[in-house]
Amino acid sequence: MSETMELATTFGRITDEALDQLRQSIGRQVRRGQPYIEELNADAIRHFAYGIGDCNPLWIDRDYAAATPHGMLAPPTALFAMDKILSGYVSGLPGVHAMFAGTTFRWLRRLRAGDRLRGTAKLKDLIERPSKFAGRSVQQVYEITFTDQDGETVAVTESYCFRTERDAARERGKYSGASAEAASWNADQLAEIGAAYRKQEEVRRGARPRYIDEVTVGEELPPLLKGPYTATTAVSYLLGWGGLYVRSHGHAFQLYEDHPALAIPNEWGVPEPPERVHWDQDLAQRVGVPGAYDYGPERVAWMGHVVTDWMGDDGFLAELDVQVRKHNLIGDLVTASGTVAEVDTETRRVRLELHASDHRGDESARGSAVVVLPERP
Image 1 (tube, one colour):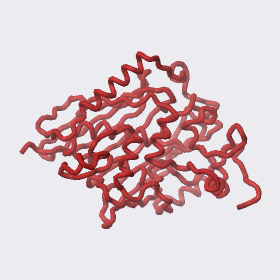
Image 2: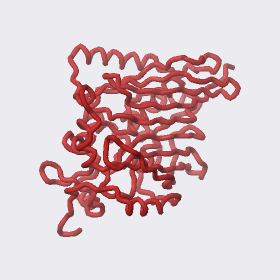
Image 3: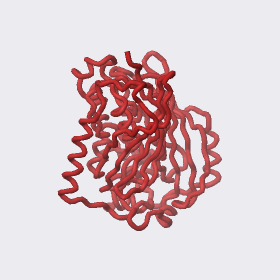
Image 4: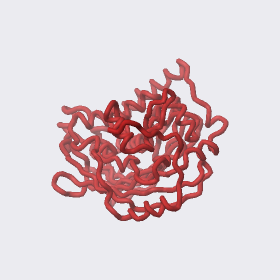
């Protein structure tokens, strides 16, 4: 280790030279980092499910799962824990902030306990976008293909982030008025939220098959609450997902020496990674957000939770496409919901429109899903 450490006292800029260098990587396979989860064992599945607040017994109860046709399964979005690039780990443009913006999944089969999955990623596109929130902004798109222990393709995904100049983002924040105010909750409101959570457990479809002939266009999916969001919520998600740059002790110092742009001093002068915007109010405000906020992949997983609760154990989530919108701040309460948009009885495929909004009514996420449902015997 070197005797001195370079700290990122200023933030990076998006330059033409840096963009040209990064564009040379388009189409090339990206070097694979160590994933948080390599095998979907029962512990890994349970930890991820708890991290997104999904207590479906199909994920967490061995005895329940053993009595189902498919055995123990994993939440489809557990792929986030099996490849860092899918979760927003990007290369190039050192010191330029990366904001996760969305993911598209296409699954070829269910994720089963015991699966050993490997993600292979390549940079697919680099698109400069106008931005009111920051100075210069670039959309960075990756394609990640997951194969199993037998070499068979399990899922094909795309994930994208927006790279934004931090100082410019701080100077031209897009949050104002009620959207910038931290939420607070009283005892009566928290009691109502608790009651709503209990009801969610009761309406999960579970072992009762949802047959294709009983689904109608315009049908609404039971909404799910998420929050109020706290720093503990972020930690809970980290325990199941693994994070991008969360390290400790010598492991952390080695990371910062290898990647100085990640070493952003905290108020005590100690380097910490940019990932701390999810629990550090000061750094979040420095990048232009009113306060600490949730993880983007976490929000995508919430939308998947809405769908899997509705479709039941015998349903198959074939596609999920989610865009995250404005950040969910500490204290925010989000309602995720969906509506049946199309029903094809021949293919047994149902297309869903998905939506999430916070307690202010501001849009938090939008997307769509395709589910394959069973026929009535």
